[in-house]
Every structure is written in structure tokens, then in C-alpha cells.
Image (cartoon, one colour):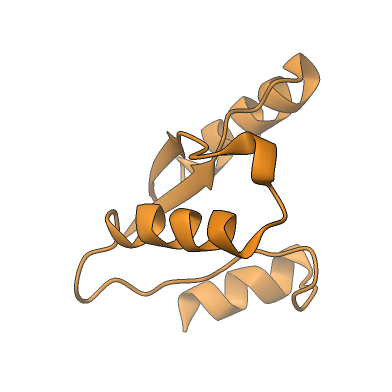
Length: 90
């Protein structure tokens, strides 16, 4: 299984990038991982409907037929690491 993470925009804070690098390195022992940072199409209009449409189109260009897609969102369901692992195993 390949886990592909698509992120819009780049991580600018070095401590976040360091933590992300460490986490990705740890996960690589369990599965093949790909991290892709996509360019932010219009950072000045971050909350607009047009911005969301552009981001959606950009993400859809990187999703293949047959991919299982999980959206990570701050308003989504919160899972513990164990719950996340269980859902990935399913």
C-alpha cells in the first residue's frame, strides 16, 4: 500500500517541518509514503469559495481512479493513533 499525502502550500515554520520529517520517517517503516506539497493557487483569497474550488481542482488532478481518499480537516472526526491505524487496516 502507498500512502500519498497531498498538502496545499508549504510548511514555513522550521519546527513543524522538522516534526513532519520525523513523523514521515517513522511511518516509512510501516508503509510506502509519498508527501507532495502542491502550490497554493491564490494565498490572498484563502477563505473564498473560488479558492476552495481551485484547491479542489488541483487535488483532483493528483487523484487516480481507484484511490481511497481521506480528507484531513480540523473540523473532522478526531481519531487516536490506534483508531487511525485500525481504520487504515480496514
